[in-house]
Length: 325
Length: 115
Image 1: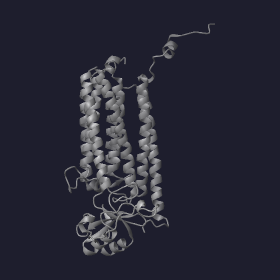
Image 2 (image 1 turned 180 degrees about the vertical axis):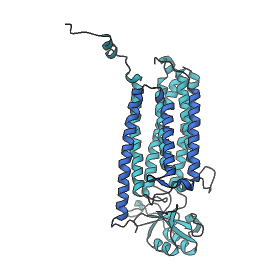
Image 3 (image 1 turned 30 degrees about the vertical axis):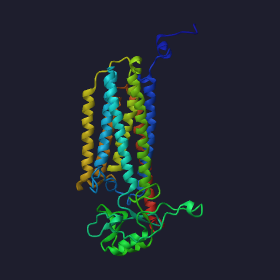
Image 4 (image 1 turned 90 degrees about the vertical axis):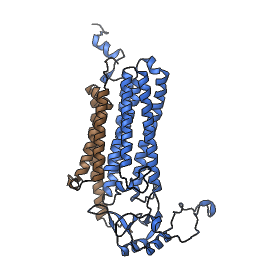
């Protein structure tokens, strides 16, 4: 018996150049990276779901939080802006897949053109996200916070519409300045003073008889539970701080976890868009230099395309779970 | 690659139109929020079920058409998709049940969260 029997099929399997599942090494690896990244994002969104279910009766209403649109000041425009961002990202996905398609036909000019459009689309999306963050951090109406961290927002008692602090707070001409560590004992400081102090807000409440607060609690018929004048006065008596805008600790829109998840999940997605743009630019220059023309294959464009579509795919879910549901 | 690629431009634009229409429907429903769809089915508003189903349809089109899973071999396609459609619903099921339980504990516990 011969020890080294080679059959035709063995040669085919073990002599190299073989592509399991009909995909090249690089393509298969980007796919498995995408699988692991998809599981990561699922973990984040599931964690968001956990917190939302935990505080199901007091979670902020997204329509009231994200209601800005560029050049439309004071206009209540829920969803319009994120819808626009979604379209921008879907469209940049289309130009990406057109670039991949042109690559299959070895059409260098078209690949270049569509890659450029994709990069521009990505940059517009990233800029839009920055604007969204800016609005979220800056805040719109302001609110007060109690010791337990509950947020109370001011509304007009007759219409139920939100009222900004600047609309009713009274200026008391206090000359209090932010206490920072370099102005006193080195270990003592405070967070920056808000536009209106708690005293000014309370004075404003006393001067305007139609101002009441609403709680974080969701009312059965939709919206939030609104307190009457008496309850508002009691709430203001136990208020500890004025909150303007949102950060990781204080959030004028409601529960701080909402802000935390918003920053973390859209931030992580934005970071993916950013890396996607960087890789796209790299591949774009390679296309111009003719690297893939000489390689006789535009598969690299296909691989970066897979990543780009994945980023779009994640946004579709972020859009649903942050803004719609 | 050995196999010849035919041009998919028509398919790409078709999928773009489908995705745009679905997004538009989502946005319009999200702004109007019809009262008839506020009823609860299986522990969630009908409207939210519609949003989630539409999102999964969008995900299907992006993965199948744009990421070209429909052109891959079956083994490749399912080794990517199967782990996700098994693990993700499982994760969501466990975590959301736990979140609901935690909510009950906070609501009925002898602890004040509002002071």
